[in-house]
Image (tube, rainbow, N blue to C red; front, side, top):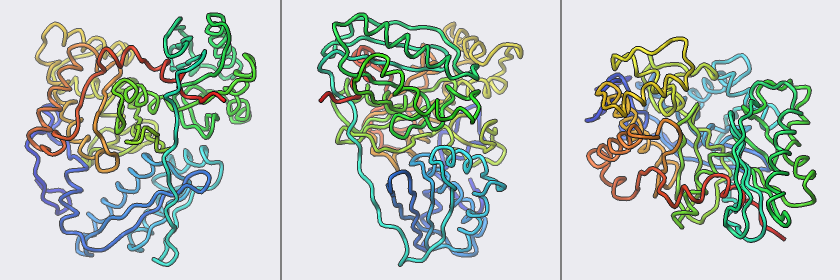
Length: 458
């Protein structure tokens, strides 16, 4: 197969998506003919800088060079997160990237998102070797603290879960339906959070700490961008940024730590497996990702892999939010199931919600429908080829696959297919890493218990 003059080989294409071009597979072949050294630095809050080195081909591969650098920068930006990208070694191609990452450019969504997170102008800087930034990066210790009386809170988009945890054992938990994505008044979210905190507190003799798992990007405990507050006007942004800290004060002067739900998912897995190098991917409304490093710490990265590229096919489905094509949310979520249904010959009710459409396909799968099976086989193929991509940036020993899409027979099928392809096409990665659904021990740890372990006491 050939894309932009680069020959690449793939044995196992998704059965329902033969046009899929795995970004990682193509990039590996591209790099075999690359010789121009290129450095990229991504800077985030508090002067944290992560640096990367790659190479590019000669001028006769103009289109491939542009495509490679565009996807490479995009992946780094959404895995690491950043307010500034510095590029060294390819001034002509870097100028195209700089033009794209403006408020009027092709990547205006990315620019606006990063500016909301870091509250400063986003910029792409082109420099020479002498002025290239020095790496300033370190993992962040978080979680794994189980002593004392703790509240663990998991803020989801359709329900909120809370647990009362005493010395690592759950003594009470509850799940309450709520609709934070529909509320323009953050008082609604605040009241719901406080109610859950108070309920859990009433089940323990005291509260020593509060840990929160929530969708969104956080600096400290502040939700800088979160779908839970998507309807809240910008004029009330400060109320949102302080919402969890203010809610904790309603319980008392106790430590509170808020973390992205993807990282907490990975933390739950690391706690249950008693090891690090654990990545968690939740396939639900979108794709959520998290990672715990070998030392048991988190990287302090975004891990917003829903917006990171996985497919280079130029006719791939576009993400409605970012406007980009071939990004993770269309391959590892309920949208992936819905996208593949027509190719499988399954007609879904157009009036149904995405969750209802997923449920309909899962019911067919559980009934042994071969058309539905092809959908989950295709997602398993996506996952195998994308895991090979993720492993270039994350040291993965365990990949935990969670979320509604991975439940039931469909989840078992996609995991089996993923492992089959890894064994055939990526044997070294197959020997190193285990792809799995959560086992019973991981389920017992749970998201809210892992969240409860986030703060240290004293």
